[in-house]
Image (cartoon, rainbow, N blue to C red; front, side, top):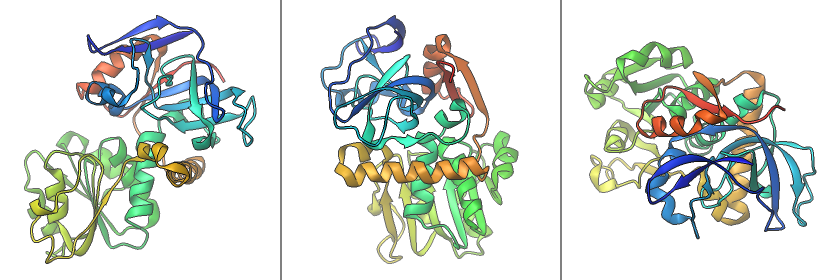
Length: 330
């Protein structure tokens, strides 16, 4: 089969012909890949490849897969050959979606939403993470306001839409000036240019010095400090990129701030509770996607042979919107 593999020693991605992967666990399924999303985590494998056991130059990445089951393991009861499925993969496993066939644990599959494979494959990593953050951690429905650092990125653009759908009154976000109209079209009510404006001062001015109910950091670096410092008393922060550090935040104890860590893929290694958290986020997001309550913004569909350069461009932060490779016809 055709596959895009990663070589650790040279830190490169290349096309190879590999044998069909084989099921080795009774909970696994073999998937014919219809479409696969390209995400920053796929591109930044140079930072996390040490988590993969027995990694070789035949390692295939690609976490977000729309596909069809062609074989099931002995313990798989809820799925059968021919079922259309969608999943967010486990980065620690070898046979991802940058190939014509992939292996995945059936216990984190969801039924494919009623949308095109290319649309579906654009959603798990960013969309399901946004769903967990906005709905399960921050409980945005009915909130007065939210601050989203990095509203034009993958998670941020979905989070804005989810906050709007939930009825959050004020959605404040940051992005470059070139993306202001874009994030407003998704539902942002107030937009801050992080390159030229003081984020904390602007948020406090927008909220009449009250601060925001909840905040979501999709950026990393020192963005968590901005997010924490604009919270009101007993405000909530969800951190996606790094570990929270309350000692760096202004009066975190006296303001009674509440912090949440979120890692969608960590559910794969935290038992049935963790696996269920992935499934529930995917199922809820899929229903909204089917109804048109959320959309995939700025989707680019590429061919299989374009994957290596797309992955490299993603790492270099030269990518705008979501990128999905079409692998096979449904």
